[in-house]
Length: 340
Ligand code: UDP
Image (cartoon, rainbow, N blue to C red; front, side, top):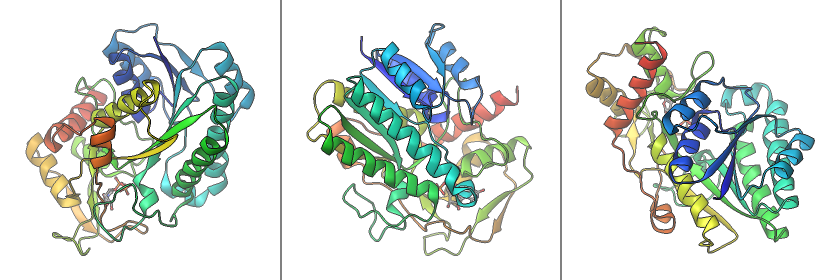
């Protein structure tokens, strides 16, 4: 059986990916420094998959010695690298924390993969690299735009580090997946997003408002040049997103890559506005949300959604869950957290 290392595997995306990898028949090794999560999702993964023996190593990939030790103690066929900080605002106020952690950990993973014969590296990138796109939907050929935050910049730089490393070292090859807006939770409601403090992202803020942890959702701007004036995004279900990783890992391990470095958009191809999402959430969960229109949030792009054709064709992957299913799963997870 092939083994996949999931760095940051106790987090939101990493835990969902771990479940899908196990269900697809891979051995998974989870590693996480627990700097931005607790054991909730790791325990949830074990419950969902029935793998009480799921190996877990608490470590930071910024520690080269620990990274090297991990790769020498385990035979790793592919690594999916999630371990990174992700709060856009914090990256602006503390850029060195972001550059230090996000770049060093990835460099160490690449060094260790190269040294220990792990050919296959999957990097978790973001649609943030497209900035405010001139043409919609965005394809992988759409130009990257200068980043508006150190966080976004680390995604661009890590993509470049992977591209250049693959070009220079025949020992490794790589795929970067550019995620649009991952939302929702596993249908079991045993794993999901666990924001620390006040959520920055829309859906956790909505579910926390609905459960009464927040008073009121602020919709940031209703005067954008979009059909209803609120921003448009491509919200991708977390389980669909996780499955894209399984397809990408299989593409690498089954020797299906056409180039040594490949990039894929992971989105639905459907734009949804903030207002449409709020309305869909209220309708599918049969509740009323307290919300108000607030000023625009600095740094937000007006509209972005994916052209996922390349992933559909080359990865054999497609988003399958409806917005309603996804928003119902997000609400089920919030209720699970609240013990309801
Ligand atoms: N948003 C909002 N209120 C919030 C959080 C987000 O209106 O409390 C909007 C935000 O302006 C953007 C969309 O929801 O248009 C998605 O924001 P999020 O932070 O989830 O993801 P982003 O696209 O910024 O990465």
